[in-house]
Image (cartoon, rainbow, N blue to C red; front, top):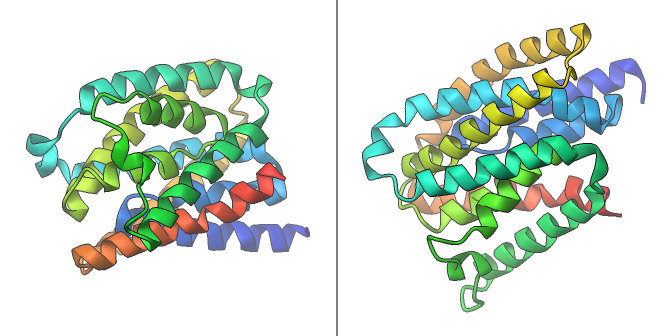
Length: 245
């Protein structure tokens, strides 16, 4: 891909990902990482996207902070997810990402089928509040392939009643895991000067896009919001399938 073509893909990915994250609380890594990876490789994509993803999540969390009094099970979930994030950051280079991507494809596919055919039992609905599957996989995947929103999004979508509650629960975990991941990346010296400049630039533009997306998302009723979230998760299958095969 030419430099101009690669930059065009990155810009489109940045805008779409930021708008999606502002509207429904997820989507930035799903779109941004594959876009960056096309021109700069997966390793650089995961590292460069870490900071902008975190600041977008912090902004979402601050906007929905009034939901904190109704939050449930986040402390235990977060503690387990943070451990998974640390492990994932340390062993990132030694794990075959195709295996992890394959796990995500199966999980997302099962969830989408359950949404299209409501009589089909959803694995996410069977998991109790004490389940460690979602936080372990979420933390591990966020640190290795940079995308945990399909697992965590599926988990919290069936455990929250409103858009704001969903975004607060989801981004609480993203902020925790994202902070752990960023600290490990910095500590291991993976941020070069060029990566740092690119990351800061993406963060500034991403915050603007997130603000616009938030206004659009506030107009969605419960049913439309759920459909948009399922649509974003379905779209995530495209880059994940590309990684798996």
